[in-house]
Image (cartoon, rainbow, N blue to C red):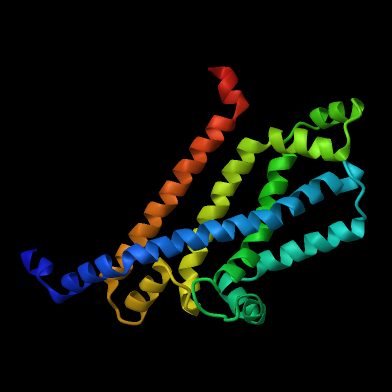
Length: 235
């Protein structure tokens, strides 16, 4: 065992851990949080539109538009992330100026994640009791008031739980973005584990990814619990 700690493999792993992992962890968190933010910005309105516009439930939206949105979401969700990253190279270059690098990886991450977020939002909003919406409509509430004061507030715990699922999923995608030169832990895992066969470093990268997932999951679960009215009323 003592020979292992004195081996070149272990010493090299310690050096990489000290020199490269701090920045890689920061890049992973930065890209994950930023990508999740933009995915929510795009996905939340789409999820609301799908539920609120269904059969003129809250707002009147042409069925053609709803079908187009539904089709786009299904198409984007069906494309594997590795293929999607390559497909959006032209768009990434247009927006960022390059198709490789840490910042460039945000574009395909957002495109891959916002349809997923839209479906999660749709799922959360469908959990709301229809009678609550009907009551608000009978009291003369406008569609905007129903969405902002009924739909969203009533589904906050579920939305936070699903946002946690989204951010942990995007975190997994960031590891794959290392294939196109994206930074972070994924880049370290691929460069050292795949190209150089230094599996100890790759394992360390995987361990830190797992730790980040646990942190995001714990924070999201606690926030959802604090916002859940049913838990508050039960105390």
